[in-house]
Length: 353
Image 1 (cartoon, rainbow, N blue to C red):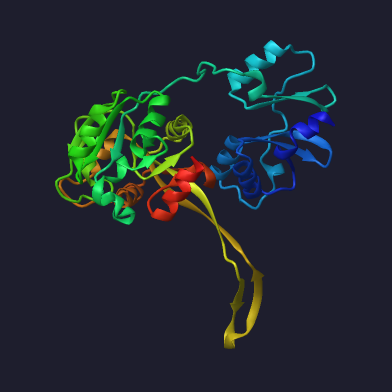
Image 2 (cartoon, rainbow, N blue to C red):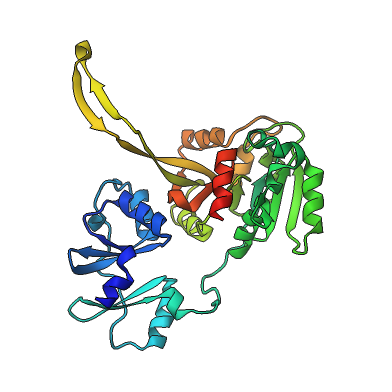
């Protein structure tokens, strides 16, 4: 009973849908759930399992039973605490079930219990260039952007620019290229005054070139896959997962997409000939994959961006697909993404952080 009480908030039934389990992770702020068939423990469900299922076109209203791996290896009662600790480190698992030979869940080790202090990162880092699109005027955040550029808007005790750059530095990326225009001198001065020095190369967008057009100015400078990020959202996803997907799937471009649900707060009626009602659906919910504004691009794509022309990232997507290229989508959960494009969203972001 003590074990079940310990994991009560992160336990689900196998009949729960994929979308419901994703929302459960968001609500409880975890990336792993324990799946049961009534009282019988079946397996664990991770955020990675859900992401791989979405990539494989699994329907979000399918039950999680269809995507869990019942053959996952867990700890056994014969293993020592030190062995379980090492297993958790190697798997980067926030929880480790202890299962006996009959499949019964006899104990659970949580990361917070096993690692009281910070542990060294046991995952290989990547060092890819990062292009940050920071040239916009941030008109939706006026009047604050009349005074400072959007990348310098504070989020906690840092600017959103620093939060984004720190996230990339934490996975090993250190070389930044920053497309600037509006109040560029203020951004350069601000970064130069920080105690932590970022390796940033600024390049000027002398006229509006769209959401990717200025990257044409980097021809000859980038020869590896690289990240492109906007400057008005924060994503809690480890971008190494996105890079692994990009490489293994042989994509030309990978878009980090948000699994976003919208609930219509009314009964929706479908009508047919003569306006006769055919069906009624009460408060339906629709789920979409939304562009989060973070991408991985193969270096060859820089040559496909026209020079000195207004060109959106959507134009590049269409161009790739028209020639038979691969544009992949890597899904992240709704609550792992925080936007500040508008005042209402910015206020939500600073409250979350």
